[in-house]
Length: 247
Ligand code: IPE
Ligand code: IPE
Ligand code: MG
Image 1: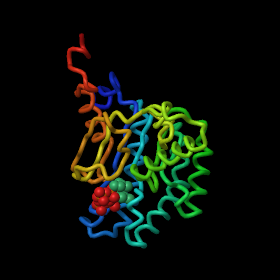
Image 2: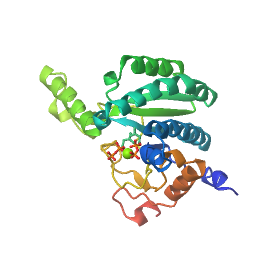
Image 3: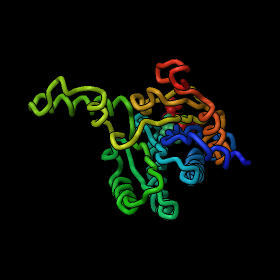
């Protein structure tokens, strides 16, 4: 049986989050402009999103642009924003063909108006798709998200619509961008960096972490299957002991 068939058999992660890192180094290694690395990164995302939907993943959440990425040189930020618009237009067909709903998390109102408009448009057009939810983290920062949630809750307490006793983990989570999805089961980061870079800090509290050296534009379906297969061999104990899980 191929690894593709094998992984479908049991314990398929419901939610995979990916830090798609290494586009710049991929381009540099080839003597190309960084923007070309990002373009090839979109090709990798198309392959991985399609393969994920086919493998039975229900939620795929990818880090496309962090709140800290605004600090990059203006030319790179502009290139990324243009690529976002052109990719949204171009990939609508891929999303429809694969029954994938597009979603976004982050401070998306910070995006240039044309990006925000196109994003909303594709989200609207794919809203009825059922097979998988592809979430783009755009202008996303986890610390910002947590502060935003805290401010919203504080406001409600101040207005008297919420009591302090009502605040617990479940309530807090309802104020995060990810309130309508389960926590990631598996977090993948490419490019050989072993850090989280302000991604989904709350949500990955019990996610399985998987780091791979390949640069994002080189990450392919087989690499995804490898990551899922590795995940399937792990024991998620959530603080308990092994015997409690398999009595
Ligand atoms: C990830 O690739 C894409 C974005 C952050 C937008 P990078 O652009 O960070 O690539 P490296 O890490 O410089 O190689
Ligand atoms: C994280 O990658 C953000 C995205 C992949 C969009 P970075 O390349 O921005 O992360 P650092 O700066 O190396 O931690
Ligand atoms: Mg990087």
